[in-house]
Length: 292
Image (cartoon, rainbow, N blue to C red; front, side, top):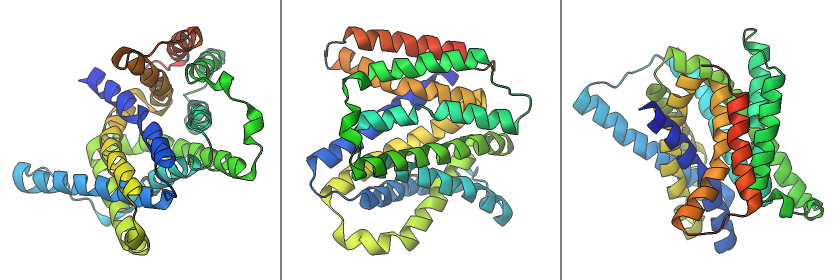
């Protein structure tokens, strides 16, 4: 069961940025805010159905107190902000750059945990493993082919800034979840996160965009809502098992997984750089991982 959860974390989170970028490339004037709205509403509808099923059929739904809901609402808004920054940054920068920036998340999570938890110190072994994995991810997604001169425009700099904001909010989100998933079950946390964000989006954002919703935004948002629901539940269970530092390292497998699946399913050829990158990523993660 644990292996299945870990596989779900990697697979469900791997393709979403690519789908968002495909939406931007194939639909003109697609609005990031519309994608964010549809994604969160679809995710909340999924969890409303799950909640009703648990409450009326399984009799297992746990109704939290207001103080507990407010506690979870903090991470709910952190997740909303993180995913919003991801979607918005892809409007201005290539997916390769966004994925490379987000690959730095494990480093920030490890640094934050070392400050918060005095028992979880980062050592030279972690840094060596992280650097190897980061180089591996960069080789796998083909960063070496990309000219940094293409990022000198103001819109690209805005995209990079938004991506780094997403990394910082993701770091806070992950380190906070270590505590919450020990206090509540991962499913309860995930359930309330999507319900809280869905209510917030429906009341305060949806009224301003529903008249102008475009087909591209709806299609990308529907996929994001479904994939995001699966990814979040699996992510929280994996975080509860592995801890925020380890699960963040695990997320670095997302990009090599997409490349490897493309080679197997779509019969695409792997370059030597990509093969080396996949190997370095796996080796680096195994060196850097915390014992748990």
